[in-house]
Image (cartoon, rainbow, N blue to C red; front, side, top):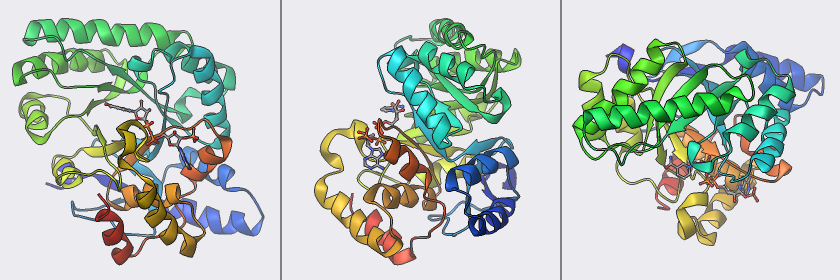
Length: 327
Ligand SMILES: NC(=O)c1ccc[n+]([C@@H]2O[C@H](COP(=O)([O-])OP(=O)(O)OC[C@H]3O[C@@H](n4cnc5c(N)ncnc54)[C@H](OP(=O)(O)O)[C@@H]3O)[C@@H](O)[C@H]2O)c1
């Protein structure tokens, strides 16, 4: 079962780098950039309700051994120009994991920014997405998903991005047979060396099992709505059991409307006072201490920085429980 467990990185290298660099007044951004470049020592963590440790690294090791920065920047921005500018800001701030969803239609703007930034491709983790859930039946789902990943490669090609670190199925098809068609197309993309890993989004346990029972390449990430304000069921545990890391979408409630209301923000902010952290930093820290990763977005530089600066404090079990009961 060990091989099915999520492997979370304990970044001993980074911690020692942090303490020595702090002494030299080097800023957090450069530490995080080093973290991404260095990777880290790995500790196997069994599935459990809370991976409470101050040593949670900015970088997880997925069940197939892939290094995966826990903080990802998403681009739900419907313009290539804005996506270009925000990608540049995210790169400058230290983000190295990007989710460029096909739904936002801005993959070209994102790709151009990656190219112009001059940051080596190998230092980035880039995830694209395919929406093919309307196709019913194995053959139709495979066809539409193949068309979808080819469109991704065309769009990313604008920035000379000729492989992805991950491709994500945005939604499952209507039944298991259709999902298997979607997956067959992804496995073909993987076989061609065009993506290193495969991921899903909005999959429940049954849909995950449909894939896991037949696949030759397993999904390693499941992007789900997940936050202190919304976390139905035991999604993190159920995914971890299957070797799948949850990546929270709407980690600050953004795409989920009013669920993350002012009283929940207030409760997070209250706990944050003790650590000199904002409500958002406490909410994101709760996610990583729960055993998940997150995909957030912002248009403000100070928020970009805040959302990465969550790896130097630890919520107590009582605080985890208080936050967990807000939903
Ligand atoms: N797979 C799916 O089905 C699915 C569905 C929906 C969304 N997504 C993805 O999820 C990602 C995140 O989307 P989301 O909008 O729901 O994310 P979110 O992070 O929950 O919400 C973003 C909002 O939070 C604010 N924010 C960010 N950092 C902050 C901070 N430090 N302090 C205060 N406010 C802060 C931003 O405002 P400012 O601009 O003012 O910072 C923005 O309005 C996107 O990439 C999207 O593509 C996926």
